[in-house]
Figure 1 (cartoon, rainbow, N blue to C red):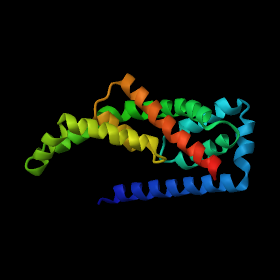
Figure 2 (cartoon, rainbow, N blue to C red):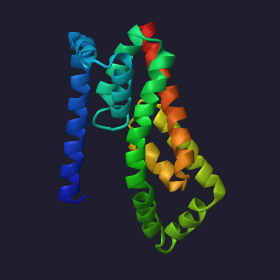
Figure 3 (spheres, one colour):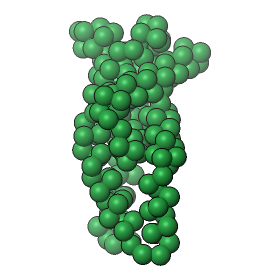
Figure 4 (cartoon, helix red, strand yellow):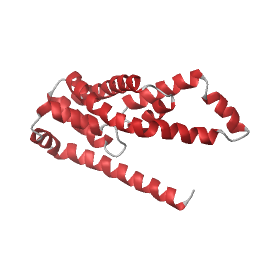
Length: 185
């Protein structure tokens, strides 16, 4: 692996680690509810902003903490409905950026001869597109960062309108499960 790639991976891992530490500190310190209340828009704005940050690898952990805190006060279905709108906005930005880039890079890689050529044939089957769509949706629904799931949806060449519906549905499910778990704990 080249030096620059290694350094980028190390920096990303460090930022993710810091993000998790910040999320834990926000929950344990009790600062998060005060901060969310200070936003002034109440549950609507707080849920939307937390949902927006739910999509990125670097902000997922604090967003999960915020969504859990909001769901302590407001019904998880409400938090999920508004939070999923924010998450769709974040996913749309990622989708627009990743849809063509990811597919182009993968297709260029797959133009090689031999084993990669056979892999290319497999990846262009309809089944594989449906499979990447399902896996991408499940990643979006999970607390995992959405970048990989959105990239997979982009690779499946989903239309933007279909992507928006899928993103909302899977983010709603993921945020609802987070809110429900936060209430149970």
